[in-house]
Image (cartoon, rainbow over all chains, first blue to last red):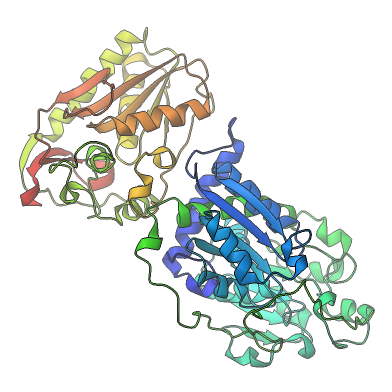
Length: 346
Length: 233
């Protein structure tokens, strides 16, 4: 495995399967009387969160603590970032404190990649802008494999706001690596421009994709990232691309419904679908801890690779470039999250 | 190298104190990726691959391994009041099939089912930081648990004792056994920790330069214990 986990494309098939197998083993720790392993004792993991997050931050924190690592939580609010400190200066501060791993979530696509060039420890991407969210893809793959027994040849339909979704991008890349067939379903306005270069199919007809699907993954409409009217009304979106009981009935009996959360009930997913037995939404959260434990263990548990690793200088090995939304590197001086005001179409 | 990773050899690399001994050289340490190979071998469980016999002196033939295990079985029965409350836990990779064989023999002799499982010690090793992260083995504890039981740890080779130390740590996170005992197929000496085995299949005086290969039908397609010098690898 590489020293950082920045893109799902960094993972070879063997790496990905190693993470899933390790996660499978580590998930058993949750059932033990003592839910802790001594493996990362004395190592420090910094959670560097420039964007709001519930699941991912808690999940990484729980994972690191179950492996006995020391965890430092850092959120942009209430830190020197509010005073105008740049990502680089923050990174150097963390470096001086001896972080062995930095888990970063940032509103700018490419921030983890920049960070990897500045710190000696491992960098784990916990979501960067509209680019990638590799541990989410890993936990999704883990959940699919647990529920359906395999990944090879699985037909996965990902529906919703693909344009703004780092989850969709990472999932397409990882699932392709693992041998699954992915179909994206979205309004044309919510697909990236370069979608034809992605290793997946595209459809605009949700209902037609359902009878063959093994997995349906619903994506949230990311209103906070939208700077234009991408669809006329929420109601129309919901009617054409939402998963309701009627569409659920079109799925084969074994098929599962996934959602990376947070959900907007009544928009992309109906409440009765979210709460149905086929929904794996809560399971995904539980699996997230196991998968993140596996990632942290595999990055930090062995010999320190920093001494031998070649500093990352070339372009990240991303197959799918983050288009449509400025996928630029982090501005040298990052001010407090300048959330580009959104013209939400509700 | 995908086979016969003898835990002692791996442990040899774990020593960080004292003068770097010329003997604990990397040559008897399995290749860095061997941990992965171990995991892969386990993933393909049940699919007994055939490992060619390593060059060297065969110190135990298949029937001798069988007899040694039968003797160990009877010793366990004697010392645990007929095998009552015994839980056999094999340490992956080769401790697991050995534990199963002992369990089968216990059942045969006493006529009641015996509890058997496996205990992976990877996360508790003291030499994790010396090599890239390894794949994990499988841990499965019988449904009865280990609280107040007599746990017999089973491994193929006892060498430095570091694997057993790690296993004791792992065990204490799983419960509180009444007693913990250790059964090994081969004791090759050279302990680095105050640990001894309760049941030994064969004492095998060896030099640190030598490598002990344990081959089992379940993992390697045949039963044998081979002592080879590193040069013959």
